[in-house]
Image (cartoon, rainbow, N blue to C red; front, side):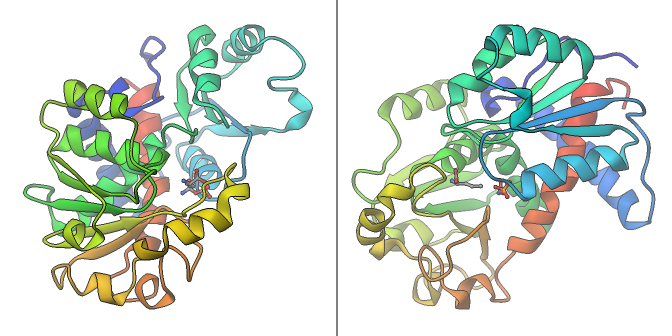
Length: 310
Ligand code: CP
Ligand code: NVA
């Protein structure tokens, strides 16, 4: 088995559109087989390590279960490994990456994963930082492709904070030619640098920036939201609740979108804040399928990164 030379997935700017399609095609194949009760051991003996500076259910379990299905193993390094505390990042990364085949990191600061990757001899995957959540956005676009049959001509509306998930969705849409409307309250928009660099990196990017949720959802095939205060922003919760009050995805807002539009959320959700029970539990909601696809897409990512022959 050939290992690709230290490719990392820190943001979706690290991969090409063709590579995203390759991940989707591996995912589709493995998901079909999984549905038939087959778990192909494409990565026997390979070891995945996970480092989490923040809580996780979906990202951790999807990677661990996915690696087990592929015949590899995984280890979660807890506080006792001393990540970021006991030795330099360079030493930690150089040593760990000599012993394992791939590392997933969920870090408070994006700089932590870029620093780690700089010294790593094995691929590093961003499992969420304050800047990006690339694995999430891949699973989201995979979910839209699966639901609608293909991505051609689709529009996605983001209603909420201009956050990590939103940035990665912009990049995923830029790769795949999906139109995206990003609707944020004033003060919670993307940094101008992010938009200008995304437009350069993704020439196909078709993005509309607005502060009007009604304008964003009109014509959208998928309406997506996320918590108003991300992990690490808990102290801003009350202020954000006031400032995001007009940005709730509720039945009234959904009624402005086409009838066959789906509702997406990366989860965990704060029900009654960014989304009502009525919407997240509706027939239009695809959030459970979306979360389940995290595991299938992680398998696609792992096989793409580690098994060149697959
Ligand atoms: N969506 C997501 O990344 O969930 P977790 O925080 O549970 O991993
Ligand atoms: N924006 C959220 C996503 C959680 C999966 C956060 O960073 O907490």
